[in-house]
Length: 387
Image (cartoon, rainbow, N blue to C red; front, side):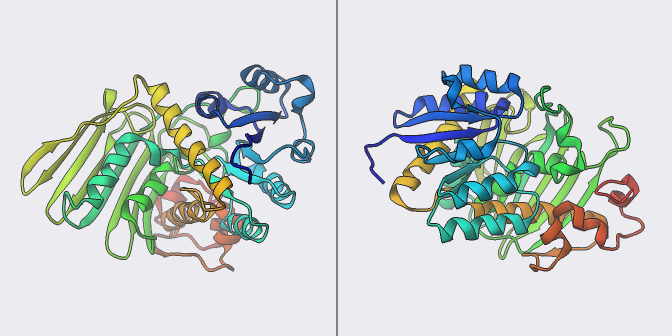
């Protein structure tokens, strides 16, 4: 691809994350241009038009017309995951590179099909796993790789203060609380899952979890608002504790020669504020590490999206994999779904899923096909179709 030619982008979906993350990132890059936008809600489409100064003939209410444009190189997909299968498949068949919001799909089978089609057509498929560009996590990763705490044994990500931000009211404010979303708080903040694998530097082989929905106030809940997830890698472990609410946030990594800890401003969970403090302890001696923070949280968020976009555009031009691939996203999805299945059955789940497994084929909807444990907190909560 001509490295001097601006990459042309079509955006499917005009949600809040486009304004907060993608818009400032694309404005920061000088070699890209948004040329078209699609949304099914006229009010959101109008907002998108204003954000990117688009003419009326660049606006669409159907994804096929946008994708069919000859001038589009990259399609950004930001609609809820339950609507992506046909859109992404059509775009890949039409020869468009894809950058997708997380989670990649509802089922691992869909994600695997995306990956196969992208490779077949020599296209790049990237994920908005933007937390790998947060400066705090980059520093944690660097300290691990430098051996600051010896060999890593346990990575703990506390995400018990996830803010339950509603979706756009023009669509459906509570869509994240519906079974059709493929999961609850863990799917909402699957960032912690891909971060665990990225920090571990290995692929997950076992998952054990508890998933419950006792507190978030929705009548007849369909998905979890609390999950305690244990992940085994070949030589280390990760613990992900996650819930909507005002619980503890932060990251702890324990190694053979010490540990490190990162906390966030206002004691909040990562992703909702900037990191406040990062220190390591080696042989019981503490060292404080300066985090190169942005001026405020919105700038902090936008910078992470700029990192993802810069890498993805370079990957398109260079014909290489982006930093976060569809295969990475499939593994994160399988870890999350394995957690849901473990919560239902009371058993440890081995990964990857067999390709004929009900959860591989049907995602969260396949959990009801497998006998649940009668004392399971997940079953007692009546979530994941077990009610």
